[in-house]
Amino acid sequence: MALLVGKPELFGVSDEQIREFYKASWGRPTILAEAQFYSWQFLEPPTAQGRSDDLLVAFDDNAGVIAGVTGVVPRPFNLAGKASQGAELTTWVVADDYRSTGVGALMMNELTKKYDALVAMGVTKFSLPVFLRSGFRIQRAIPRYLRPYNLQAVSEIGAVDPLARKLQQKWTPTAGRANYQVDEDVAAADQIWNRFSQTHHGFARDAEHLAWRYLNHPVFTYRVFTITTGEAQAVVALRIEDAVPGIRILHVVDLFGDDDAIAAAFDFVDDFSVGNDIDIADFFCSSTKVGKHPLAKGWFSALDDQSLRFPHLFHPVTMRDPPTTTLVYWSKENFAEMCDFSGFYVTKSDADFDRPVAKPKDAISA
Image (cartoon, rainbow, N blue to C red; front, side):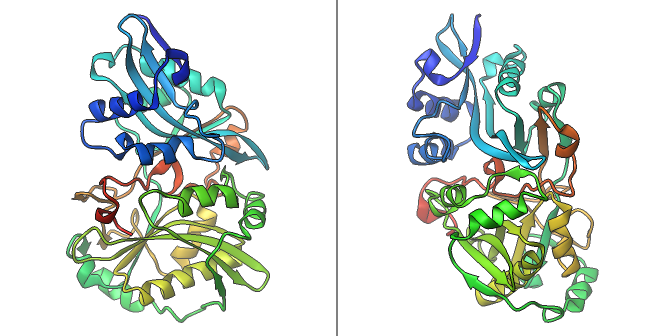
């Protein structure tokens, strides 16, 4: 066995072969085996230039077979006030025959040599030791915030205690609400991201990246809004989940900008939800600077408010404790800054945590 690690082109591995590897090795049906989604994920990001060269392949040169694949989406990562060469690790699959061969460590070593900052989410118990031995740190539960609008519907797939009902009654949506204007576009995203990145670190969210991630998504339908209040602006990206019978869920997949506008954007989420018959909204966000706003406005914390428990996996609906996911992170330099979660901005949109699981577009929430 001669295990080598590198770009697919080094071993003559085609995109079709990688999709077939995902199909055979994933253990369940995966949309990564579909050509359209694979193309969007790996060929169409702003940094890809139409090539999947950034995927990392482990190849058994003797047997002439793929031993493992790590899905890599290069994306500028703002850290310590400047852009560095970062990457989202979206998938990591090793064939059964190559487990415990050291292939994971080989791949991780290659990644940490090439990139300055790396982030992955939803890490399995099998891959976690490799991440930790490679210098990554783990946050076992990304903060997740919940805003219920219809507790009866929520109780069909979640758990609602009497205290949650009293707390929802205490919530007053008109208290302290801001006046805001709404534009459904990303025209101001570059300026908004530039200001936000002065106080936060995370993956680039300029207009080009937002257009790729949301407006050009091959399966899901997202809506992206710019919220303006006074001189402050924020960007918010939303997706309605209709795939679970009897309940309508709003995923707030991105929300960043000037502090006053972030607060106003949560008021907009309330107004949008009421106008679109949403039963519950959720928002994953690692930054406490952003997370202070939903807490102050009466959103439930999925980690701390045990009176309301709601799944984060919907295909099938699965209740886990805690109902959120893991985050692993690493940087070559300024690691103390990387570990500062007051300004570490990661949401459901990063590392493709908001990935479809069904194949046909009309079978997936829009």
